[in-house]
Image (cartoon, rainbow, N blue to C red):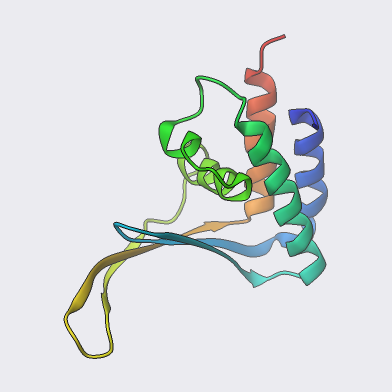
Length: 135
């Protein structure tokens, strides 16, 4: 497993190619979806997801500084994305709307939020976790 310093370096290397990338979160009371959008090369997006999975796996053992909303996530990549949402920021305010079911009654409220420059923000969070780590 990489150290937080190595994770920060990997995200920093990806950041220039992801300046116009957006990590989008869409959620309601029962589900949550993440999507990498914006202007980003496929190779950079794939590398970002791979490093995010590694960081999320490492985050599982990070201890008491991890909020419960992050710690409960079982998927490593989604755990990192949730860490960006709950531990880093600021982000744009979410947009809340109603989901309709093909002309039938509303399925309830749905929220959409965006994290701009996710590789840059990931590097900053990894650096913070590195400086917070004991030893």
